[in-house]
Image (cartoon, rainbow, N blue to C red; front, side, top):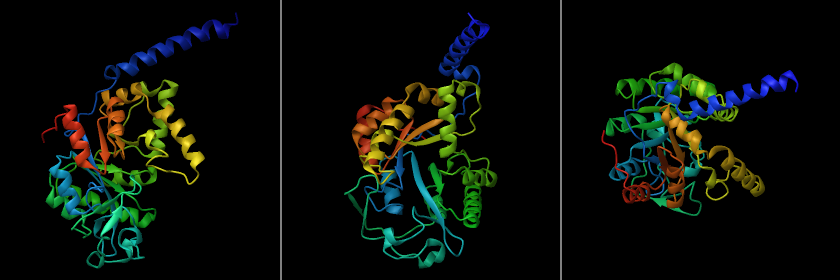
Amino acid sequence: MSPLLYYGLPALGGYAMLSIFFLRRPRLLHTPWVSVFHPRLGAHRGGSGERLENTMEAMENAMAQRADLLELDCQLTRDGVVVVSHDEKLSRQSGLNRDVSSLNFEELPLYKKELEVYFSPGRFAHGSDRRMVSLEEVFQRFPRMPMAVEVKRDNEELIRKVVLQIAALVRHFNRDDITIWASEKSSVMKKCKAANPEMPSSFTINRGIWVLLLYYLGLLPFIPIPEKFLLCFLPTIINRTYFPFSCPGLNQLAAVVCKWIIMRKSLIRHLEQRGVKVIFWCLNEESDFEVAFNLGASGVLTDYPTALRHYLDNRGAAAPAF
């Protein structure tokens, strides 16, 4: 037997055993972050399946269902107001072919009378409240409600401005511990953390891929994790309610590959034990709620908070007290 095999195989075996040992017992190496809230029920865009997305009426409805988290997207108006809006271009939401950044806050149009629910194609939401609201109004109305605020812009200058505005608002309302930085892009997240490092952050796409790579290499138990939340899509919704690609074949392939890679109980359990809250989005069916919680997720983001509340109550999951 060659020296490489003679010494290498036992070393590799020992490394594998050590990795598995600490994967299951991460608290021997890391002190878990302790959250001040427990996000079981998250309302996506304020609960955009039951009321018009991102309106105060939608958020009030989510609060009535004892939501633990509001997920909101932020844009910046021409006069520097942080507005709660998923889209920068207003055509889908209001029919007006203008950008949020090209209008003052008082010039923003009303939402359409009905909007299709993005993650439930063919289903529409209605509501009596059609007014776009500022983030400051939301903070004033729900001062201790945990929220995840996502910065959607690509324009570097507008990103810098909206991030600084959000950070200032969070500090003003003393919400550093209950407001989560969220962004898909690492470049944006870097600006977010620089503006207010006291706010907990979620994984970007690149950081999520990095964690998966570390997990499969067996290195994850030994690497620090600064993020406190993993907001991740549930792979089983691909090609059913979530269509990331225009080609059906690519969606089918993505569903299979992502399901095999992401849906690992040992990975989710490890992250949870290290204090990282794993939240799957955007789930609107009871069968998907079941899959997410059986995997060990902390919570779910949904467009239908009433349906998720009904599921949690029947499952015996008590809503946390703030």
